[in-house]
Image (cartoon, rainbow, N blue to C red; front, side, top):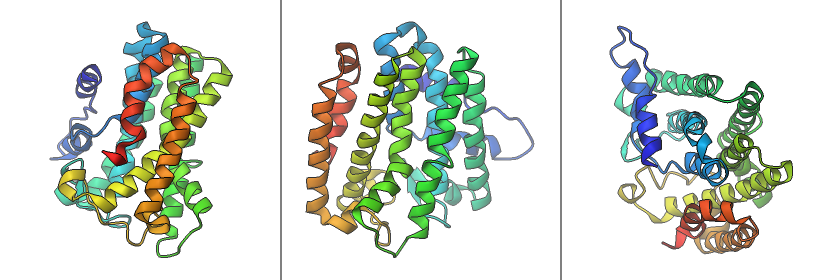
Length: 283
């Protein structure tokens, strides 16, 4: 991912003005690191089939990372999770103020689509990528999940409802990463659908593992505020730690079986990433 990190640093939003911290705030959380899980998925699929498109695909990967980072900035706000730590750094509303954090999130949201609109793809591909990211990162995906999450704090949901919550809040953006990679390289519609479905369940597993991490790791280990889910509809709060680990293992085993059905280039490209995250909660 060194190429992606270099691309990210070279393409940070540059908006000179007399505002003392605006440009710095836009870059702060992007440069704080993170797993880069979503860009890795997108770029690995492109690299598996069309390495010559890799350079151009970094624009799409950066757009995805910017949208994801905006969601983290807003998720940490006092009105939502009121978290002080993210990616091992103070959250933006702590480092600056709440207004700056809100506006930085707003800016990264729109910057994602600005970057996509200027990506070196045919117009029809760009429109499709914008459609996917807007759908799964917005009204019909992540924002819906966040709305459910916040509205139903202190109101226990059923397991099926919790899965709907986290399918939207977390899983759809992970699935969108895989789908966007597939669209860029022009994979068959059936393969695109298979990758998207796999990404949804991978995203659910990712969320269960995050809930387990919140329960079992310190802030220093996790690099973010933990122990902050007591009022949330998390898998651990509903199923308990042991039950959540069983749910994660069941989902991981199913995903591993489905992964083995992918063709050779895709398995080779994704194996390291997928294997790392399938049983992350056991590490």
